[in-house]
Structure formats: structure tokens, C-alpha cells
Length: 176
Image 1 (cartoon, rainbow, N blue to C red):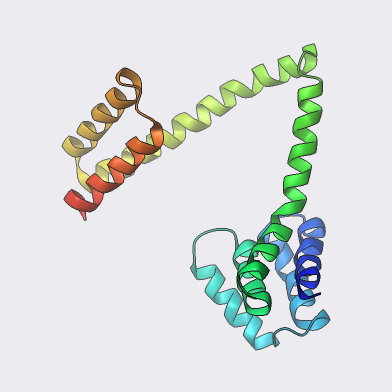
Image 2 (image 1 turned 60 degrees about the horizontal axis):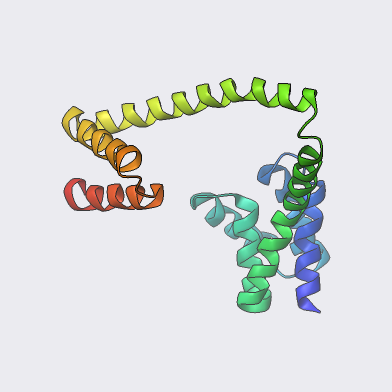
């Protein structure tokens, strides 16, 4: 029964918490503190503070913690799944709708209009990465990493995950 309660406690804020984590925090508090009584307001505040200190979405971190406290590892899995389930279901539904109408001229035009926007956003992101790398490590190491990464990806067709892992190892060994 506890797993159903954990699911409901995090699924409801996931559905009606429009605006992401910050908008769903009061809803999660209502479920966890007032409805089920799993925590006091002070304990919830401490979990919220700890969750804000860690990277990643706040709602999933809180769901994992509360789910683990109430139902162990499986409770944490249920809590995190309940938090992401509304978005997951909506994405699958919208993707299937888009796939259904993929041959429509309007859908093709929409995707053609989105591509330049995505390209610009990726270009800005790449520039920011380059600028922060240049400031942190200098032009020579940044240039060498860019050239080696380009060759590994384009010439030798190495999987991107391996290139990223190699860059992380390089950074840990030579820059750490």
C-alpha cells in the first residue's frame, strides 16, 4: 500500500504542478507533510534545502529521498517514476501524434522552421563551452581537445560517449 501512496503523492504534483519543480514544491509539501504525515514542516524544509544544493531537478530528488525513506529502494524508484510519468506520457502522446502526421506539409514546414533555431542554440552552447574552456585551461589545451575530438568523431567515427569519457579522463589527469 505504501508504494501506491508514494506514487499518488508524487504523481499528483507532477500533473498539476505546471511550471516545473519550483511550482510543484508546495504541492509536494502538501502531500508529504499534510496528507500523509511522512515528515514535519521542518524536516521538509531541510530536505528541500539539501535538494536545492544538489544538481538536477528538485522534484525528482525529493521524490527519490521521500520514496526511499518510506519504501526503500523500490519506494525511491516509484517516487521518481511518479514524478516524471506525467511528462513522459505527454511526450509519448505528442510524439505519436507528430509521427502520425509526419507527412503533412504543415508538420514538415514546422520542423524545417525549428531546425535553424536548434542550430543557433547549439552554436551558442558550443561557443559558451569554448569560451569557458579557453578561460579555464588556455588556448592550447582547448585547441588540442577540439582537434582531437573532431578527428575522433568525424574521421575515425568513435562513439561520442567514448570521446566525452576520454575528455573527462584527460581533464581529471592533466587539469585536475
